[in-house]
Length: 336
Ligand SMILES: Nc1ncnc2c1ncn2[C@@H]1O[C@H](COP(=O)(O)OP(=O)(O)OP(=O)(O)O)[C@@H](O)[C@H]1O
Image 1: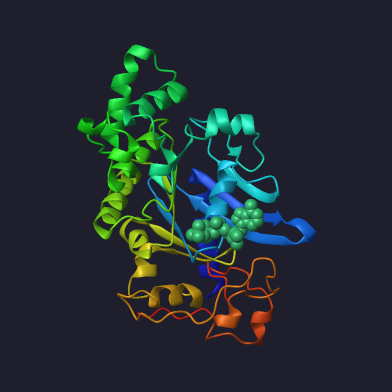
Image 2: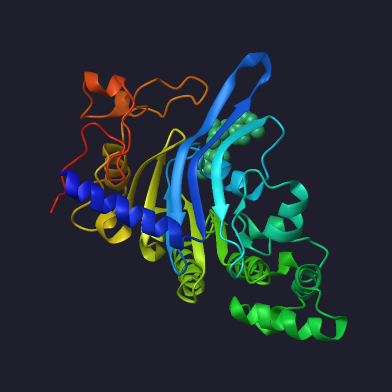
C-alpha cells in the first residue's frame, strides 16, 4: 500500500471520527482476578460510528464483544480496569461525553436509555414476568421522558408501533409472547428515549432463521431513520444482512475493519482470521479454523492468531499494528 493511499485512508478516518455519534480510541478492559492474574478482555480497540450506519462487531464466543459493550454502558464489574476514550456526541451542539470516565449518576440519568438505547441479548429475560408489555412501555416512557400520566398510554402505543409490536398484544405478559415479539418489545423499550446510538448485543440469539432476518431488517429500519447501530453478534449472516461495516475481534483485539460489501463480497476480508471465519460458514467452504483461541489470561506479545494462522512467519512474534484497518503482517490479497 502506497503512502498516498494510507494518507487518504487516514483522512477518511479523521473525517468519520468528526461526524461520529460514537468514537472509541484505545479502549482496553482488563479484569483483575484473585491471585494477581488478569484477563485482557479488550485491548486497544478503535471504532467510529456515524449516523445512519450499522457497524457489526463480530468474532467467536469469548473474544470480548460483550465486555466492550458493557464498557460503553458503564456496566462492568468492580474488578475491571478500563482505559482509552469512548466519546459519545452530545445532543445538539453540546460537547461529547466520555463514556469511560462518566460517573454512574451521569450514565444512569442521561446516557443509558436516553442517549444510548440497548437492545438486549435475551429480551424475555430483560422483561419483568409479572408486567404486561404496556406496563413496561408506560413505565419506561415515564422514567425517560417525564410524560404526564394521561399521555403515557399514547406514547407507549407509539413506541410499540415504531418497533412493529402489534397493539393487539400490548396487554400480554412476556411469557405469552413469541421470541420475535419479545424481541420487538425489547426494541420498542430501547427506542423510547429516542437515542441516536443503539447498541444491540446478540439480538438474534435463539431465534430461527426467519425471525433472525425479520429482527435484522427491523434494526436496519431504525438505522435508515438516521440512528447509529453497534450490532454485536457472532451471526455473520445477520451482519451481512444489515451492516454497513464489519469489525472483527479476535482475543480482545479488533483485527480488521472493512466495508460490509467488501468483507462479504468477492474481494473478501484481508485478515487471515476474518477469512477463516467466513470460510467456516456452512454456506461457504465449511472449513473450520484449526485450533482454539488463546486464553485471555496468557496472551502472547505478538499476534494472538499466529498459532492458528496459515500465513504466520517469525515476524508474527511481534504485534502487528493496524495498517489500513488490518492488523496483520501478512494480510491476504483481495480475492477479486
Ligand atoms: N467479570 C469478569 N471477570 C473476569 N473475566 C471476565 C469477566 N467478564 C468477562 N470476562 C472474560 O472476558 C472475556 C470476554 O468475554 P465476552 O463476554 O466479552 O465475550 P463475547 O465475545 O461477548 O462472547 P459471547 O459471544 O460468548 O458472549 C471472556 O474470556 C470472559 O471469560
